[in-house]
Length: 386
Image (cartoon, rainbow, N blue to C red; front, side, top):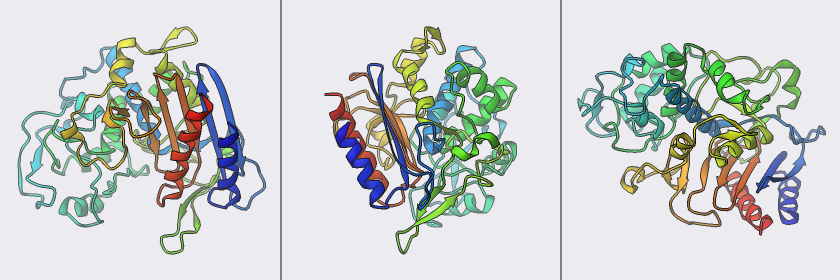
């Protein structure tokens, strides 16, 4: 871990990152490196138990909650979602991504739970300049996030209503499209369970796994453990505040508990989740999810044609709410699974090596600084287990 320690210290000293927490678990032996401070220019040190905005690393827990409902026979993977999500019934589909909103054809079939879990339900983030296509303009006008983000200030039923007024971008099952499937799954979980998404997640996963610092907001007695979140100024490249701790976006319960990027958590909480997955659904000898359910989550279900054009990861495949490695492009083994977050988080497991790696910062991936740090973290993580 010496090289990782030097790497993190150098990144902090350069001013690129105020602080960082890195965790590597290999065969149950856990090593953690912490560097820097909670706030740029501050003196309060980053700590192992610092609470981070997990961003898109939320998606894995959303998928796991869906699998819990499947195992309770409250959802079925290949059933249409029309009954619980009537907003998505009777879909029409654009003839092309640049088509006018009324230039559509009927969907070939209903949307299923499987489609939502694999991001192939036909709707998602548009990888194009803002306003390039009519569907992007409509999404922005409706306030539902043309860049794949979901507004947490909107009530989930209202968000679903607005989403249901738009056509799909692709036929169900045809193409992987990023993000929005996880947000829809959060609504589906609430409706299928009869509780809020957060309540069900807490009861079925967070409490059994001891993830006591994970949730959709940071309580007042813990808010001092949440660092400032930063983005880069588009012209100068300097760090600018994206979200403060006290009084910020995560300081109170949101109206919409978003399944795509809404959670806050810690390195050790996410380690508990990943260990459960590596243990095929058990935690401290207790069954949390079935072996078969975990294997479904962490297996690739998509073809190269379905994944073509994915710019959000290099795994090559996709399971339920997470990338699954089907090609080797670096140190990671085939079968590695996990996902990163746009606010500066990476969480992955390598079953072949018995490795879990978690790197947490709060500097957005809007320049090459954070992606390069993530790559260097994985390079040093694999060195540390040799």
